[in-house]
Length: 303
Image 1 (cartoon, helix red, strand yellow):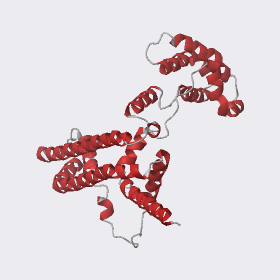
Image 2 (cartoon, helix red, strand yellow):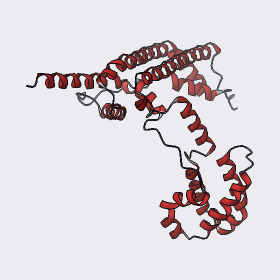
Image 3 (cartoon, one colour):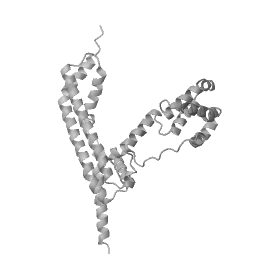
Image 4 (spheres, helix red, strand yellow):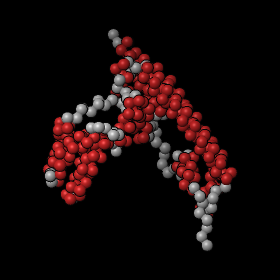
């Protein structure tokens, strides 16, 4: 006789994965090599990213001194949250074991244990939301410490939201030209009869994605795409398409008289937030600050 299958088992698998500390499995392994001295390759990679953004913003010594306590607060909050996560896992581990045993046995997990895991997950989500709020506040605070020219290099949260909305509408492409090229790459894979059968539909779908919603210009753009771009490219063989691909974006922009793509910020908002929240940012900034002050002192002592 088949055992009853547990209802809603997937959320509990995901929940256990969220609660499981990332280093738990690694901690159970017996080290076979001597611990590495100094930064690990991962830390060095992140250090380079911290220094790269530092250079892109051209932060002054005074600005670094002001920014350091802001990012240090975020780092301390991350440590506190990790400790809370570890403590929560210690308390919920027995419940997790029972839930796993129930799932393996093909029965619904006990209500008391699932409630405990629910509570632990909700508390962790609250900690993550709180830390995300701190990071957003820190981003605003740091941007106020910058000059107008420095701040202009960083994408704002509102600009990021608009960029993400465009990307979602354009299937991940960041500009209209990139989207058209993506659709032409798909078109190049079609058989001739399949292209003929779907050309008008594809042109309309592309125009709708580019303009968004029910723009009155959709039909005109679809006709222009079909007449001046898609049908012409459809006549090319694979060799010519490969030859033209590198300059096809420029040709499309000129043919359709598309406006130039908006200038990209040197630093995207998500990269700025990652810089603020990286645990490597405070120590790297301290080292940079110490090096600068040492250099300034040496210059001041020079005859």
